[in-house]
Length: 128
Image 1: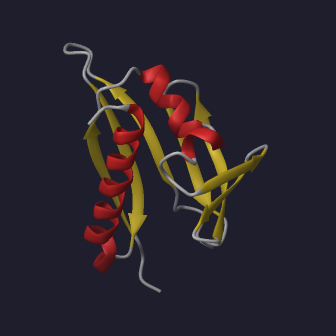
Image 2: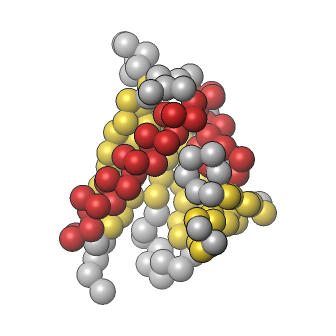
């Protein structure tokens, strides 16, 4: 299996960081834009899309700022995905930074998937 490549993408979003964090770090918030349904027990999260489920472990979380997950079926410990809220100190513009990993030939496809997901998030919070 090829090594995955780490990539980062930034999405400007018009929302307060505290509101945004609720959509990134809670099962109910994530199920409004990221997956059809999300359940959690402690640090274990179950994401459900069209009946298929994927399990992830929450690795770290900093209230109001970021959350990091690792897919359980991914054997390599170094791969994760992180959702980070960034606020520009001068302009106060808010962005979501996505840090993720993908196979070299799937990076562009993965970025487009994130763009679609963030577009759904923007619709949910009225930031279109």
